[in-house]
Amino acid sequence: MDSGVILNSSLSGGLDLQATLESGQTYLWDRDDGEDYLSSGLSGGSAWYSSVIEGSVIRLRQVEGQLEWRSTSNVDKVIRRVLGLDDDLDQIMKMSIEDSLIESAYSTYKGMRIVRDPFFPCVVSFICSSQMKVERIFGMQQRLRRKYGDKIRFEGKDYYEYPKVEVLADLDESDLREMGFGYRAPYVIETAKMLKNDPDGVGYFVEDYEQNREKLTELRGVGQKVADCICLFSLGHLEAVPLDTWIRSTIKTHYPNCDHKSYQDMSQAVRNKFGPYAGYVQTYIFHYLRHEAGRTSNIVSL
Image (cartoon, rainbow, N blue to C red; front, side, top):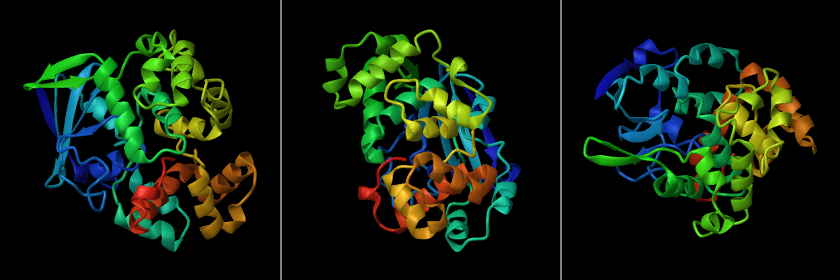
């Protein structure tokens, strides 16, 4: 077993682990207490979270100003990458426009970071996200791991890796429909088949963000919004702004000059307004309004 700590004070802008893992960015982490997406405030908690990434069980919790981790191997670098700990949050905040909504979101959830999930799990998670509450998306991904993922025993408990691409590629559509995937079932299976020889998505990463977004739409079930989620939450395009119906309504209310009918035009307008870290701004606003408006049960995934 390996273990370690990362001090909040060593990270520019600090870290809020709960806000990072329960803000609709990632569905790969389980809370030990089973209270995922249920706790009041959605920030500042000290619960243990666990996942299996790159074959290693990783357990995390945040207490007394530090991030504690335990794992089957030394995963310090992996944790820093997947939690976006090298992002300079202080600088990102300074570069944002002066706006009362954004400032309130930043101050309420200070330390929330943009994740970099592994490519294939991120793709499948957001294929499943269309018109779905975040709690249901999480439950679907959890069931998928427990039924089809490799099991690893660690500290007397079983943990499940995300299913390998070839495993999902070989499923029948009925296998996923029985698990509640509905019309998303064929999308997941067909995309798995497309990625069978490239599970890390090397061929789908293009340095130019807009080209990357368009290339990702080649995958079955991946439209522009899902492609933006993958760009932002896996590939590190921090300018990406996933636009679903709720976010578009929020923009219309709070930033009417950015309101356009076409996805492409609204995306460009929001990026022009919010700058190179528009994805951070949008994620903070989404999480802030999701909780502060008291509408948790009505908000769907980005």
